[in-house]
Length: 555
Ligand SMILES: Cc1cc2nc3c(=O)[nH]c(=O)nc-3n(C[C@H](O)[C@H](O)[C@H](O)COP(=O)(O)OP(=O)(O)OC[C@H]3O[C@@H](n4cnc5c(N)ncnc54)[C@H](O)[C@@H]3O)c2cc1C
Image (spheres, helix red, strand yellow):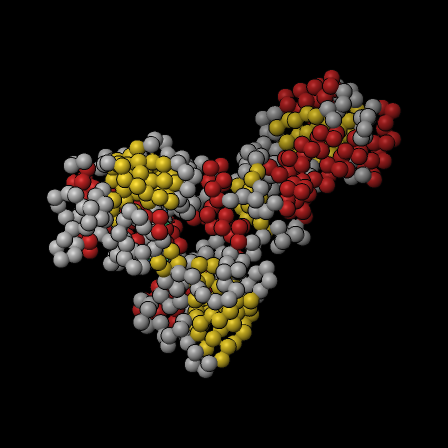
Protein backbone atom coordinates (compact mmCIF):
# COMPACT_ATOMS: atom_id res chain seq x y z
CA UNK A 1 0.00 0.00 0.00
CA UNK A 2 1.26 3.53 -0.83
CA UNK A 3 2.19 5.51 2.26
CA UNK A 4 -0.29 8.23 3.32
CA UNK A 5 0.93 11.76 2.70
CA UNK A 6 1.93 14.64 4.96
CA UNK A 7 1.81 17.85 2.89
CA UNK A 8 3.37 21.10 4.07
CA UNK A 9 2.95 24.43 2.28
CA UNK A 10 5.10 27.50 2.89
CA UNK A 11 6.27 30.24 0.52
CA UNK A 12 9.45 30.69 2.61
CA UNK A 13 11.80 28.05 1.25
CA UNK A 14 13.96 27.91 4.42
CA UNK A 15 10.97 27.26 6.66
CA UNK A 16 9.60 24.75 4.16
CA UNK A 17 12.88 22.85 4.09
CA UNK A 18 13.10 22.84 7.89
CA UNK A 19 9.58 21.53 8.43
CA UNK A 20 10.01 18.88 5.72
CA UNK A 21 13.23 17.72 7.36
CA UNK A 22 11.62 17.42 10.78
CA UNK A 23 8.57 15.65 9.43
CA UNK A 24 10.64 13.21 7.40
CA UNK A 25 13.00 12.31 10.24
CA UNK A 26 10.13 11.54 12.61
CA UNK A 27 7.42 10.16 10.28
CA UNK A 28 9.27 9.20 7.07
CA UNK A 29 9.02 5.46 7.77
CA UNK A 30 5.22 5.50 7.77
CA UNK A 31 4.30 8.55 5.72
CA UNK A 32 5.38 10.23 2.51
CA UNK A 33 6.40 13.84 3.17
CA UNK A 34 5.75 16.35 0.39
CA UNK A 35 6.44 20.09 0.43
CA UNK A 36 5.12 22.87 -1.78
CA UNK A 37 6.12 26.56 -1.86
CA UNK A 38 2.80 27.72 -3.32
CA UNK A 39 -0.76 27.10 -2.09
CA UNK A 40 -2.10 27.17 -5.68
CA UNK A 41 0.35 24.49 -6.79
CA UNK A 42 -0.39 22.52 -3.63
CA UNK A 43 -4.12 22.51 -4.51
CA UNK A 44 -3.30 21.23 -8.02
CA UNK A 45 -1.17 18.54 -6.48
CA UNK A 46 -3.98 17.54 -4.12
CA UNK A 47 -6.35 17.15 -7.10
CA UNK A 48 -3.81 14.84 -8.76
CA UNK A 49 -3.44 12.84 -5.55
CA UNK A 50 -7.23 12.49 -5.38
CA UNK A 51 -7.30 11.11 -8.95
CA UNK A 52 -4.53 8.64 -8.01
CA UNK A 53 -6.56 7.55 -4.97
CA UNK A 54 -3.73 8.50 -2.59
CA UNK A 55 -4.48 9.22 1.06
CA UNK A 56 -3.53 12.51 2.72
CA UNK A 57 -3.18 12.40 6.49
CA UNK A 58 -1.98 15.91 7.26
CA UNK A 59 -2.08 19.37 5.66
CA UNK A 60 0.25 21.85 7.34
CA UNK A 61 0.20 25.40 5.93
CA UNK A 62 1.87 28.65 6.82
CA UNK A 63 -0.71 31.34 7.63
CA UNK A 64 1.10 34.24 5.91
CA UNK A 65 1.46 33.58 2.19
CA UNK A 66 1.14 36.26 -0.53
CA UNK A 67 -1.81 35.19 -2.74
CA UNK A 68 -3.70 32.85 -0.48
CA UNK A 69 -3.34 32.63 3.30
CA UNK A 70 -3.04 29.35 5.18
CA UNK A 71 -6.65 29.31 6.39
CA UNK A 72 -8.02 29.77 2.88
CA UNK A 73 -5.72 27.07 1.52
CA UNK A 74 -6.77 24.62 4.22
CA UNK A 75 -10.43 25.32 3.57
CA UNK A 76 -10.06 24.63 -0.15
CA UNK A 77 -7.91 21.57 0.55
CA UNK A 78 -10.60 20.28 2.93
CA UNK A 79 -13.05 20.07 -0.02
CA UNK A 80 -10.64 17.63 -1.70
CA UNK A 81 -9.42 15.62 1.33
CA UNK A 82 -11.97 16.22 4.10
CA UNK A 83 -10.52 13.57 6.41
CA UNK A 84 -6.99 15.02 6.44
CA UNK A 85 -5.91 16.73 9.66
CA UNK A 86 -5.40 20.46 9.10
CA UNK A 87 -2.85 22.58 10.95
CA UNK A 88 -1.49 26.11 10.63
CA UNK A 89 2.04 27.38 11.11
CA UNK A 90 1.83 30.86 12.59
CA UNK A 91 4.01 33.63 13.90
CA UNK A 92 3.31 34.90 17.39
CA UNK A 93 1.58 37.97 15.89
CA UNK A 94 -1.00 35.76 14.13
CA UNK A 95 -2.09 33.87 17.21
CA UNK A 96 -5.55 35.45 17.26
CA UNK A 97 -6.17 34.65 13.59
CA UNK A 98 -5.14 31.07 14.27
CA UNK A 99 -7.46 30.73 17.27
CA UNK A 100 -10.45 32.02 15.32
CA UNK A 101 -9.54 29.66 12.43
CA UNK A 102 -9.76 26.74 14.84
CA UNK A 103 -13.21 27.87 15.85
CA UNK A 104 -14.58 28.93 12.50
CA UNK A 105 -12.71 27.19 9.71
CA UNK A 106 -12.37 23.63 10.94
CA UNK A 107 -8.60 23.85 11.57
CA UNK A 108 -7.46 21.17 14.04
CA UNK A 109 -4.34 22.79 15.49
CA UNK A 110 -1.83 25.61 15.11
CA UNK A 111 1.94 25.52 15.66
CA UNK A 112 4.05 28.54 16.57
CA UNK A 113 7.22 29.30 14.63
CA UNK A 114 9.90 28.40 15.50
CA UNK A 115 8.90 24.98 16.81
CA UNK A 116 12.28 24.08 18.33
CA UNK A 117 12.81 21.63 19.80
CA UNK A 118 10.33 19.60 17.69
CA UNK A 119 10.27 16.85 20.31
CA UNK A 120 8.42 19.32 22.53
CA UNK A 121 6.61 21.69 20.21
CA UNK A 122 5.79 19.64 17.14
CA UNK A 123 5.88 15.84 17.46
CA UNK A 124 3.65 15.30 20.52
CA UNK A 125 0.82 17.34 18.98
CA UNK A 126 1.29 15.79 15.54
CA UNK A 127 1.33 12.30 17.10
CA UNK A 128 -2.07 13.07 18.56
CA UNK A 129 -3.46 14.34 15.27
CA UNK A 130 -2.08 11.41 13.29
CA UNK A 131 -3.33 8.83 15.82
CA UNK A 132 -6.73 10.39 15.49
CA UNK A 133 -6.52 10.29 11.68
CA UNK A 134 -5.41 6.64 11.68
CA UNK A 135 -8.32 5.60 13.89
CA UNK A 136 -10.83 6.44 11.16
CA UNK A 137 -8.59 5.78 8.12
CA UNK A 138 -9.77 3.14 5.63
CA UNK A 139 -7.08 2.22 3.06
CA UNK A 140 -8.12 3.19 -0.47
CA UNK A 141 -8.28 0.83 -3.46
CA UNK A 142 -4.87 0.74 -5.11
CA UNK A 143 -5.59 -0.87 -8.48
CA UNK A 144 -7.15 0.22 -11.76
CA UNK A 145 -10.40 2.21 -11.51
CA UNK A 146 -12.88 2.47 -14.36
CA UNK A 147 -15.37 5.34 -14.43
CA UNK A 148 -18.36 5.03 -16.71
CA UNK A 149 -22.08 4.47 -16.81
CA UNK A 150 -23.94 1.19 -16.72
CA UNK A 151 -25.85 1.83 -19.92
CA UNK A 152 -22.89 2.89 -22.02
CA UNK A 153 -21.88 0.21 -24.58
CA UNK A 154 -18.29 1.48 -24.46
CA UNK A 155 -18.13 1.11 -20.68
CA UNK A 156 -19.59 -2.38 -20.99
CA UNK A 157 -17.07 -3.39 -23.66
CA UNK A 158 -14.20 -2.18 -21.51
CA UNK A 159 -15.38 -3.87 -18.31
CA UNK A 160 -16.04 -7.10 -20.15
CA UNK A 161 -12.56 -6.94 -21.67
CA UNK A 162 -10.88 -6.37 -18.29
CA UNK A 163 -12.92 -9.07 -16.56
CA UNK A 164 -12.26 -11.66 -19.27
CA UNK A 165 -8.56 -10.90 -19.24
CA UNK A 166 -8.54 -11.29 -15.44
CA UNK A 167 -7.38 -7.72 -14.86
CA UNK A 168 -8.71 -6.65 -11.44
CA UNK A 169 -10.38 -3.23 -11.39
CA UNK A 170 -12.80 -1.14 -9.40
CA UNK A 171 -15.93 -0.04 -11.25
CA UNK A 172 -17.35 3.40 -10.49
CA UNK A 173 -20.74 4.05 -12.07
CA UNK A 174 -20.70 7.86 -12.09
CA UNK A 175 -24.49 8.07 -12.36
CA UNK A 176 -25.29 5.55 -9.64
CA UNK A 177 -22.62 6.96 -7.32
CA UNK A 178 -23.51 10.60 -8.06
CA UNK A 179 -24.67 11.08 -4.49
CA UNK A 180 -21.52 9.52 -3.01
CA UNK A 181 -19.35 12.38 -1.66
CA UNK A 182 -16.08 10.59 -2.48
CA UNK A 183 -17.12 10.07 -6.14
CA UNK A 184 -18.14 13.74 -6.31
CA UNK A 185 -14.72 14.80 -5.07
CA UNK A 186 -13.01 12.53 -7.60
CA UNK A 187 -15.11 13.96 -10.47
CA UNK A 188 -14.34 17.50 -9.32
CA UNK A 189 -10.64 16.71 -9.21
CA UNK A 190 -10.86 15.34 -12.76
CA UNK A 191 -12.63 18.51 -13.92
CA UNK A 192 -13.68 18.55 -17.58
CA UNK A 193 -11.90 15.22 -18.19
CA UNK A 194 -14.65 13.50 -16.22
CA UNK A 195 -16.95 13.87 -19.23
CA UNK A 196 -14.67 11.80 -21.50
CA UNK A 197 -16.09 8.47 -20.30
CA UNK A 198 -15.09 5.75 -19.94
CA UNK A 199 -12.11 7.03 -17.97
CA UNK A 200 -9.53 4.55 -16.71
CA UNK A 201 -7.33 5.63 -13.79
CA UNK A 202 -4.13 3.69 -13.21
CA UNK A 203 -2.33 3.42 -9.87
CA UNK A 204 0.74 5.21 -11.30
CA UNK A 205 -1.35 8.36 -11.67
CA UNK A 206 -1.82 8.13 -15.44
CA UNK A 207 -5.26 8.03 -17.02
CA UNK A 208 -6.90 7.13 -20.29
CA UNK A 209 -9.88 9.18 -21.47
CA UNK A 210 -12.55 7.69 -23.76
CA UNK A 211 -10.71 4.43 -23.21
CA UNK A 212 -10.90 1.52 -25.60
CA UNK A 213 -9.72 -2.04 -24.87
CA UNK A 214 -6.72 -1.88 -27.23
CA UNK A 215 -5.23 1.13 -25.41
CA UNK A 216 -5.90 -0.36 -21.99
CA UNK A 217 -4.39 -3.67 -23.15
CA UNK A 218 -1.11 -1.93 -23.93
CA UNK A 219 -1.10 -0.06 -20.65
CA UNK A 220 -1.76 -3.14 -18.48
CA UNK A 221 0.98 -5.07 -20.20
CA UNK A 222 -1.07 -7.31 -22.50
CA UNK A 223 1.27 -7.73 -25.42
CA UNK A 224 -0.04 -6.33 -28.72
CA UNK A 225 3.19 -6.59 -30.74
CA UNK A 226 5.00 -9.84 -31.48
CA UNK A 227 8.49 -10.25 -30.03
CA UNK A 228 9.88 -11.67 -33.25
CA UNK A 229 8.62 -11.78 -36.81
CA UNK A 230 8.79 -15.57 -37.30
CA UNK A 231 7.32 -18.54 -35.39
CA UNK A 232 7.18 -22.29 -35.99
CA UNK A 233 3.50 -22.24 -35.06
CA UNK A 234 1.05 -19.34 -35.02
CA UNK A 235 -2.42 -19.95 -33.59
CA UNK A 236 -5.28 -17.54 -34.26
CA UNK A 237 -7.91 -17.75 -31.52
CA UNK A 238 -7.43 -18.38 -27.81
CA UNK A 239 -10.45 -20.51 -26.98
CA UNK A 240 -10.10 -24.07 -25.65
CA UNK A 241 -8.90 -25.39 -29.04
CA UNK A 242 -6.28 -22.66 -29.52
CA UNK A 243 -5.08 -22.88 -25.92
CA UNK A 244 -4.71 -26.67 -26.14
CA UNK A 245 -2.72 -26.33 -29.37
CA UNK A 246 -0.54 -23.69 -27.72
CA UNK A 247 0.20 -25.88 -24.68
CA UNK A 248 0.96 -28.99 -26.74
CA UNK A 249 2.89 -27.10 -29.43
CA UNK A 250 5.12 -25.19 -27.03
CA UNK A 251 5.61 -28.14 -24.68
CA UNK A 252 6.90 -30.11 -27.66
CA UNK A 253 9.45 -27.46 -28.53
CA UNK A 254 7.66 -25.37 -31.16
CA UNK A 255 8.26 -21.62 -30.98
CA UNK A 256 4.60 -20.67 -30.62
CA UNK A 257 2.52 -17.49 -30.69
CA UNK A 258 -1.21 -17.31 -29.96
CA UNK A 259 -3.20 -14.35 -31.30
CA UNK A 260 -6.44 -13.52 -29.48
CA UNK A 261 -8.53 -10.44 -30.19
CA UNK A 262 -10.71 -10.40 -27.05
CA UNK A 263 -9.59 -12.58 -24.18
CA UNK A 264 -8.19 -16.11 -23.88
CA UNK A 265 -10.96 -18.58 -23.07
CA UNK A 266 -13.22 -17.87 -26.05
CA UNK A 267 -16.84 -18.90 -25.65
CA UNK A 268 -15.86 -21.22 -22.84
CA UNK A 269 -14.65 -18.16 -20.92
CA UNK A 270 -18.27 -16.96 -20.88
CA UNK A 271 -19.59 -20.17 -19.40
CA UNK A 272 -20.50 -19.77 -15.73
CA UNK A 273 -20.17 -23.52 -15.07
CA UNK A 274 -18.88 -26.25 -17.37
CA UNK A 275 -20.15 -29.46 -15.83
CA UNK A 276 -19.11 -32.00 -18.44
CA UNK A 277 -15.37 -31.43 -18.67
CA UNK A 278 -13.40 -34.54 -17.72
CA UNK A 279 -11.72 -34.44 -14.33
CA UNK A 280 -13.89 -31.73 -12.73
CA UNK A 281 -16.75 -33.63 -11.07
CA UNK A 282 -18.34 -30.54 -9.58
CA UNK A 283 -17.74 -28.47 -12.72
CA UNK A 284 -15.60 -25.41 -13.18
CA UNK A 285 -16.22 -21.97 -14.53
CA UNK A 286 -15.01 -21.14 -18.03
CA UNK A 287 -13.02 -18.23 -16.59
CA UNK A 288 -11.19 -20.62 -14.27
CA UNK A 289 -10.45 -23.05 -17.09
CA UNK A 290 -9.13 -20.20 -19.25
CA UNK A 291 -6.96 -18.78 -16.46
CA UNK A 292 -5.39 -22.20 -15.77
CA UNK A 293 -4.77 -22.84 -19.47
CA UNK A 294 -3.16 -19.42 -19.97
CA UNK A 295 -0.78 -19.99 -17.05
CA UNK A 296 0.08 -23.43 -18.43
CA UNK A 297 0.70 -22.04 -21.94
CA UNK A 298 2.86 -19.23 -20.61
CA UNK A 299 4.86 -21.68 -18.53
CA UNK A 300 5.83 -23.45 -21.74
CA UNK A 301 6.85 -20.13 -23.30
CA UNK A 302 3.84 -19.40 -25.53
CA UNK A 303 3.68 -15.75 -26.53
CA UNK A 304 0.13 -14.39 -26.28
CA UNK A 305 -0.77 -11.38 -28.42
CA UNK A 306 -3.85 -9.23 -27.80
CA UNK A 307 -4.55 -8.64 -31.48
CA UNK A 308 -7.01 -9.43 -34.24
CA UNK A 309 -5.91 -11.36 -37.33
CA UNK A 310 -7.42 -9.70 -40.39
CA UNK A 311 -5.69 -11.39 -43.33
CA UNK A 312 -3.54 -14.31 -44.36
CA UNK A 313 -1.38 -15.11 -47.39
CA UNK A 314 1.23 -17.68 -48.37
CA UNK A 315 4.72 -17.00 -49.64
CA UNK A 316 6.56 -20.24 -50.47
CA UNK A 317 6.68 -22.27 -47.28
CA UNK A 318 5.75 -19.24 -45.15
CA UNK A 319 2.24 -18.43 -43.96
CA UNK A 320 1.89 -14.72 -43.22
CA UNK A 321 -0.75 -13.25 -40.93
CA UNK A 322 -1.76 -9.62 -41.06
CA UNK A 323 -2.93 -7.99 -37.82
CA UNK A 324 -5.49 -5.25 -37.28
CA UNK A 325 -2.64 -2.80 -36.51
CA UNK A 326 -1.14 -3.63 -39.97
CA UNK A 327 1.83 -5.53 -38.50
CA UNK A 328 2.56 -8.98 -39.90
CA UNK A 329 4.07 -12.14 -38.54
CA UNK A 330 5.10 -15.19 -40.47
CA UNK A 331 5.16 -18.84 -39.51
CA UNK A 332 5.62 -22.28 -40.95
CA UNK A 333 2.41 -23.73 -39.54
CA UNK A 334 -0.76 -21.74 -38.95
CA UNK A 335 -3.66 -22.96 -36.86
CA UNK A 336 -7.07 -21.35 -37.14
CA UNK A 337 -9.03 -21.78 -33.91
CA UNK A 338 -11.36 -18.80 -34.16
CA UNK A 339 -14.52 -20.59 -33.00
CA UNK A 340 -17.91 -19.04 -33.57
CA UNK A 341 -19.60 -15.78 -32.64
CA UNK A 342 -23.18 -15.12 -31.63
CA UNK A 343 -25.88 -14.90 -34.28
CA UNK A 344 -27.62 -11.53 -34.32
CA UNK A 345 -31.19 -11.28 -33.10
CA UNK A 346 -33.15 -9.59 -35.87
CA UNK A 347 -35.73 -7.30 -34.26
CA UNK A 348 -36.17 -3.52 -34.27
CA UNK A 349 -34.29 -1.76 -31.48
CA UNK A 350 -31.92 -4.64 -30.70
CA UNK A 351 -28.86 -3.34 -32.57
CA UNK A 352 -29.37 0.19 -31.26
CA UNK A 353 -29.51 -0.93 -27.61
CA UNK A 354 -26.71 -3.51 -27.76
CA UNK A 355 -24.40 -2.90 -24.80
CA UNK A 356 -27.06 -0.73 -23.15
CA UNK A 357 -29.22 -3.44 -21.59
CA UNK A 358 -28.98 -5.91 -24.50
CA UNK A 359 -26.02 -8.26 -24.59
CA UNK A 360 -24.85 -11.24 -26.62
CA UNK A 361 -23.47 -14.03 -24.48
CA UNK A 362 -22.95 -14.49 -20.81
CA UNK A 363 -22.24 -10.93 -19.77
CA UNK A 364 -20.23 -12.08 -16.75
CA UNK A 365 -19.66 -8.46 -15.76
CA UNK A 366 -23.37 -7.72 -15.90
CA UNK A 367 -24.63 -10.44 -13.54
CA UNK A 368 -24.01 -8.33 -10.43
CA UNK A 369 -25.53 -5.21 -11.98
CA UNK A 370 -28.78 -7.12 -12.42
CA UNK A 371 -29.26 -7.53 -8.68
CA UNK A 372 -32.93 -7.42 -7.81
CA UNK A 373 -34.02 -6.94 -11.44
CA UNK A 374 -35.91 -9.05 -13.97
CA UNK A 375 -33.53 -10.55 -16.54
CA UNK A 376 -34.63 -11.94 -19.92
CA UNK A 377 -32.55 -14.75 -21.45
CA UNK A 378 -33.29 -15.53 -25.11
CA UNK A 379 -32.56 -19.07 -26.32
CA UNK A 380 -33.07 -22.64 -25.22
CA UNK A 381 -29.64 -24.24 -25.54
CA UNK A 382 -27.19 -25.13 -22.77
CA UNK A 383 -25.50 -21.74 -22.94
CA UNK A 384 -28.85 -20.04 -22.18
CA UNK A 385 -29.54 -22.50 -19.34
CA UNK A 386 -26.16 -21.88 -17.72
CA UNK A 387 -26.59 -18.12 -17.99
CA UNK A 388 -30.08 -18.32 -16.47
CA UNK A 389 -28.69 -20.30 -13.52
CA UNK A 390 -25.97 -17.70 -13.03
CA UNK A 391 -28.32 -14.69 -13.22
CA UNK A 392 -30.79 -16.37 -10.85
CA UNK A 393 -28.22 -15.91 -8.06
CA UNK A 394 -28.55 -12.12 -8.31
CA UNK A 395 -31.72 -11.22 -10.21
CA UNK A 396 -35.16 -11.12 -8.66
CA UNK A 397 -36.49 -13.20 -11.56
CA UNK A 398 -35.04 -14.71 -14.74
CA UNK A 399 -37.33 -15.29 -17.73
CA UNK A 400 -36.12 -17.68 -20.44
CA UNK A 401 -37.75 -16.93 -23.79
CA UNK A 402 -37.96 -19.85 -26.25
CA UNK A 403 -39.79 -20.15 -29.55
CA UNK A 404 -40.60 -23.86 -29.04
CA UNK A 405 -42.84 -25.69 -26.61
CA UNK A 406 -40.14 -26.75 -24.14
CA UNK A 407 -36.42 -27.01 -23.52
CA UNK A 408 -36.22 -30.75 -23.94
CA UNK A 409 -34.95 -30.82 -27.53
CA UNK A 410 -32.29 -28.13 -27.05
CA UNK A 411 -30.94 -28.31 -23.49
CA UNK A 412 -29.17 -31.10 -21.59
CA UNK A 413 -31.37 -32.87 -19.06
CA UNK A 414 -29.10 -32.01 -16.09
CA UNK A 415 -29.56 -28.30 -16.85
CA UNK A 416 -33.31 -28.62 -17.40
CA UNK A 417 -33.49 -30.22 -13.94
CA UNK A 418 -31.52 -27.37 -12.39
CA UNK A 419 -33.62 -24.72 -14.15
CA UNK A 420 -36.85 -26.37 -13.00
CA UNK A 421 -35.65 -26.54 -9.41
CA UNK A 422 -34.74 -22.83 -9.31
CA UNK A 423 -37.82 -20.94 -8.08
CA UNK A 424 -36.93 -17.54 -9.59
CA UNK A 425 -36.45 -18.90 -13.14
CA UNK A 426 -39.53 -18.81 -15.33
CA UNK A 427 -39.81 -20.43 -18.77
CA UNK A 428 -41.85 -18.53 -21.40
CA UNK A 429 -42.48 -20.84 -24.36
CA UNK A 430 -43.81 -19.90 -27.84
CA UNK A 431 -42.16 -16.52 -27.28
CA UNK A 432 -39.91 -14.43 -29.51
CA UNK A 433 -38.66 -10.86 -29.23
CA UNK A 434 -40.62 -8.61 -31.63
CA UNK A 435 -39.05 -5.28 -30.61
CA UNK A 436 -36.81 -3.67 -27.99
CA UNK A 437 -37.77 -0.24 -26.68
CA UNK A 438 -35.86 2.46 -24.82
CA UNK A 439 -34.13 5.78 -25.41
CA UNK A 440 -30.67 5.52 -23.85
CA UNK A 441 -31.06 1.95 -22.60
CA UNK A 442 -33.43 -1.00 -22.74
CA UNK A 443 -36.71 -0.18 -21.00
CA UNK A 444 -39.31 -2.54 -22.48
CA UNK A 445 -39.63 -5.59 -24.70
CA UNK A 446 -42.42 -6.54 -27.06
CA UNK A 447 -42.80 -10.32 -27.02
CA UNK A 448 -44.69 -12.12 -29.75
CA UNK A 449 -46.58 -15.14 -28.37
CA UNK A 450 -46.94 -17.52 -31.29
CA UNK A 451 -49.63 -19.64 -29.58
CA UNK A 452 -52.04 -16.70 -29.14
CA UNK A 453 -50.73 -14.43 -31.91
CA UNK A 454 -50.65 -11.55 -29.39
CA UNK A 455 -47.80 -9.16 -28.66
CA UNK A 456 -47.14 -8.49 -24.98
CA UNK A 457 -45.16 -5.43 -23.92
CA UNK A 458 -43.20 -5.96 -20.68
CA UNK A 459 -40.81 -3.75 -18.69
CA UNK A 460 -37.18 -4.95 -19.03
CA UNK A 461 -33.75 -3.65 -18.09
CA UNK A 462 -31.58 -6.53 -19.23
CA UNK A 463 -31.78 -9.08 -22.03
CA UNK A 464 -29.08 -11.66 -22.83
CA UNK A 465 -29.16 -13.38 -26.21
CA UNK A 466 -28.01 -16.97 -26.80
CA UNK A 467 -29.46 -17.97 -30.15
CA UNK A 468 -26.68 -19.94 -31.77
CA UNK A 469 -23.48 -18.91 -33.40
CA UNK A 470 -21.63 -18.76 -36.72
CA UNK A 471 -17.95 -18.50 -37.64
CA UNK A 472 -16.48 -15.20 -38.81
CA UNK A 473 -14.03 -16.31 -41.43
CA UNK A 474 -14.40 -13.74 -44.21
CA UNK A 475 -10.79 -12.68 -43.68
CA UNK A 476 -9.71 -16.18 -44.83
CA UNK A 477 -12.09 -16.42 -47.77
CA UNK A 478 -9.54 -15.89 -50.56
CA UNK A 479 -7.15 -18.49 -49.21
CA UNK A 480 -8.94 -21.21 -47.25
CA UNK A 481 -11.92 -23.25 -48.47
CA UNK A 482 -15.12 -22.80 -46.43
CA UNK A 483 -18.59 -24.33 -46.49
CA UNK A 484 -21.68 -22.25 -47.32
CA UNK A 485 -21.97 -21.06 -43.68
CA UNK A 486 -18.31 -20.07 -43.36
CA UNK A 487 -16.99 -23.14 -41.45
CA UNK A 488 -13.53 -24.27 -42.62
CA UNK A 489 -13.16 -27.53 -44.53
CA UNK A 490 -10.44 -29.91 -43.43
CA UNK A 491 -9.05 -33.38 -44.16
CA UNK A 492 -11.51 -35.79 -45.83
CA UNK A 493 -14.09 -32.98 -46.31
CA UNK A 494 -11.78 -31.54 -48.98
CA UNK A 495 -11.73 -34.71 -51.09
CA UNK A 496 -14.36 -35.00 -53.80
CA UNK A 497 -14.61 -38.38 -55.51
CA UNK A 498 -11.15 -39.09 -54.20
CA UNK A 499 -9.80 -35.90 -55.84
CA UNK A 500 -7.58 -33.57 -53.79
CA UNK A 501 -8.36 -29.83 -53.65
CA UNK A 502 -7.37 -27.80 -56.72
CA UNK A 503 -3.87 -26.29 -56.44
CA UNK A 504 -2.93 -28.98 -53.87
CA UNK A 505 0.64 -29.82 -54.97
CA UNK A 506 1.71 -32.40 -52.37
CA UNK A 507 1.77 -36.15 -52.99
CA UNK A 508 -0.34 -36.86 -49.92
CA UNK A 509 -3.92 -36.09 -48.91
CA UNK A 510 -4.55 -33.19 -46.52
CA UNK A 511 -4.06 -34.32 -42.91
CA UNK A 512 -7.15 -34.87 -40.79
CA UNK A 513 -7.31 -31.26 -39.49
CA UNK A 514 -5.49 -29.59 -42.37
CA UNK A 515 -7.23 -27.14 -44.73
CA UNK A 516 -6.78 -26.93 -48.51
CA UNK A 517 -3.57 -24.95 -47.88
CA UNK A 518 -0.72 -27.21 -46.67
CA UNK A 519 0.43 -26.04 -43.25
CA UNK A 520 -2.82 -24.22 -42.41
CA UNK A 521 -4.87 -26.22 -39.91
CA UNK A 522 -8.35 -25.62 -38.45
CA UNK A 523 -9.55 -26.87 -35.07
CA UNK A 524 -12.52 -26.50 -32.75
CA UNK A 525 -15.87 -24.88 -33.47
CA UNK A 526 -14.68 -23.08 -36.60
CA UNK A 527 -14.12 -26.39 -38.36
CA UNK A 528 -16.85 -27.83 -40.57
CA UNK A 529 -18.44 -30.80 -38.85
CA UNK A 530 -16.86 -30.21 -35.45
CA UNK A 531 -18.62 -31.16 -32.24
CA UNK A 532 -19.22 -27.93 -30.39
CA UNK A 533 -17.83 -28.85 -27.01
CA UNK A 534 -14.90 -27.75 -24.84
CA UNK A 535 -13.43 -31.23 -24.69
CA UNK A 536 -13.59 -31.78 -28.44
CA UNK A 537 -11.94 -28.40 -29.08
CA UNK A 538 -9.19 -29.31 -26.62
CA UNK A 539 -8.84 -32.72 -28.27
CA UNK A 540 -8.56 -31.30 -31.78
CA UNK A 541 -6.10 -28.60 -30.68
CA UNK A 542 -3.77 -31.16 -29.17
CA UNK A 543 -4.12 -33.79 -31.92
CA UNK A 544 -3.41 -31.21 -34.62
CA UNK A 545 0.04 -30.62 -33.15
CA UNK A 546 1.00 -34.17 -34.19
CA UNK A 547 0.08 -33.36 -37.80
CA UNK A 548 2.03 -30.13 -37.57
CA UNK A 549 5.15 -32.07 -36.57
CA UNK A 550 4.66 -34.31 -39.61
CA UNK A 551 4.13 -31.26 -41.82
CA UNK A 552 7.19 -29.44 -40.44
CA UNK A 553 9.42 -32.48 -40.96
CA UNK A 554 8.91 -32.05 -44.73
CA UNK A 555 9.06 -28.23 -45.01
C1 LIG B 1 -22.24 -19.70 -22.58
C2 LIG B 1 -21.64 -20.98 -23.14
C3 LIG B 1 -21.62 -22.12 -22.35
C4 LIG B 1 -21.04 -23.29 -22.84
N1 LIG B 1 -21.01 -24.39 -22.03
C5 LIG B 1 -20.39 -25.51 -22.44
C6 LIG B 1 -20.29 -26.65 -21.58
O1 LIG B 1 -20.79 -26.64 -20.44
N2 LIG B 1 -19.62 -27.74 -22.03
C7 LIG B 1 -19.05 -27.79 -23.27
O2 LIG B 1 -18.43 -28.80 -23.59
N3 LIG B 1 -19.16 -26.75 -24.12
C8 LIG B 1 -19.81 -25.61 -23.74
N4 LIG B 1 -19.91 -24.55 -24.59
C9 LIG B 1 -19.34 -24.65 -25.94
C10 LIG B 1 -17.81 -24.43 -25.90
O3 LIG B 1 -17.52 -23.30 -25.11
C11 LIG B 1 -17.24 -24.26 -27.28
O4 LIG B 1 -17.51 -25.43 -28.02
C12 LIG B 1 -15.73 -24.05 -27.24
O5 LIG B 1 -15.42 -22.88 -26.52
C13 LIG B 1 -15.15 -23.92 -28.65
O6 LIG B 1 -13.78 -23.67 -28.53
P1 LIG B 1 -12.94 -23.02 -29.71
O7 LIG B 1 -11.57 -22.83 -29.18
O8 LIG B 1 -13.12 -23.80 -30.94
O9 LIG B 1 -13.60 -21.60 -30.04
P2 LIG B 1 -14.03 -20.38 -29.13
O10 LIG B 1 -14.25 -20.79 -27.73
O11 LIG B 1 -15.17 -19.75 -29.85
O12 LIG B 1 -12.76 -19.41 -29.17
C14 LIG B 1 -12.40 -18.73 -30.34
C15 LIG B 1 -11.53 -17.55 -29.98
O13 LIG B 1 -11.00 -16.98 -31.17
C16 LIG B 1 -10.98 -15.56 -31.06
N5 LIG B 1 -10.99 -15.00 -32.42
C17 LIG B 1 -11.96 -15.13 -33.36
N6 LIG B 1 -11.57 -14.52 -34.49
C18 LIG B 1 -10.33 -13.99 -34.26
C19 LIG B 1 -9.41 -13.25 -35.05
N7 LIG B 1 -9.69 -12.93 -36.32
N8 LIG B 1 -8.25 -12.85 -34.49
C20 LIG B 1 -7.94 -13.19 -33.20
N9 LIG B 1 -8.77 -13.90 -32.41
C21 LIG B 1 -9.95 -14.30 -32.94
C22 LIG B 1 -12.26 -15.25 -30.30
O14 LIG B 1 -12.17 -14.00 -29.66
C23 LIG B 1 -12.31 -16.42 -29.31
O15 LIG B 1 -11.67 -16.09 -28.10
C24 LIG B 1 -20.49 -23.34 -24.15
C25 LIG B 1 -20.52 -22.19 -24.94
C26 LIG B 1 -21.09 -21.03 -24.45
C27 LIG B 1 -21.11 -19.80 -25.30
